[in-house]
Length: 406
Image (cartoon, rainbow, N blue to C red; front, top):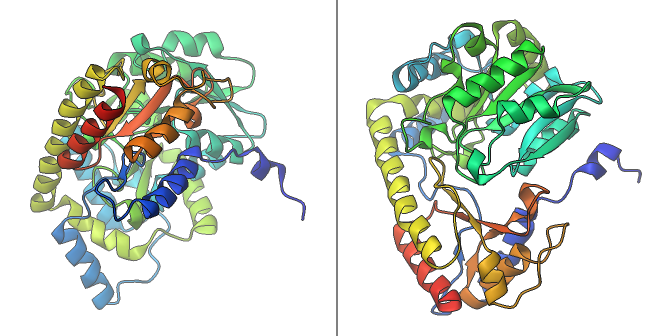
């Protein structure tokens, strides 16, 4: 069977490869005193709160399970619009909001609508690997630009200007970012988007972790930029992270008004609509009781970060930039690799953090994610921990790390 070149260009999602190995080892140690602790997957340990679960059950009982409009339930678009106004002081018309089958569908629709074959999209290195594959699926090419801790592992306007070429179509950013949990400073983001906009390009920004911001300086949506800048940026968001609905596969896209009919037409053909049950359930996310619960959980995520990052630093797994959002710690593991006598990192991402991940899996029953997924600049130097687990599990993880590295 002949496989399409676009499919062959998509690399394995190594975090899932590691997860498979961790799951297999977890079966072996299931009855031991030290079952596997999974700090490798970015999934909240919380599930949808009671009102959301009740709304889903009610939708099923009432038969509210048929197709919705391709753009989503008007009531849900209205509620998201009001949430932007209340939470971020952002004026986002409901007509600009398109409900999608998760942030993945939002990214796919945006890329297919805007990227031609051969177009180049600038992205930071490190960054979430699936995002660059959405660019590739649209026959574009993701151009990874190495970033530094001093830049918060984010693109700057200066670097975008330097990298801009004849085939550059725009940029794809994430703020807060996976794997670093760092955001772009609002003034830098505005300079960057102004530059892209002045060159006729597009700025796409993944804001799926925006609700899980812990610093008022960074916890502002790109949609709050003034005038045409705020109207022209394209924001991707999701109910998975802040709203704790990962498996419900529900997200949304905010686009300029002129792009709405284009994306609607594509959504009609490619997806028909997002899950109707998930949409009806999501209406309850914006009830005061649910929002209060989400804020309580956000404070718990922050407390976990505040405990875990200093502990990693103490153990020699230095986190060069304190995450201001999300639930990740991107740690320099060079010292640990040397301490354990592991192979040095190789350009393909093997050795270094890759070997350390399997060593921690074996010796500490602790699953983490090596840097191999996240870029090409220094993939074997960094390792990602997820702090989406309970405080008790994080404390146990620290004790196990100390037994290996202490």
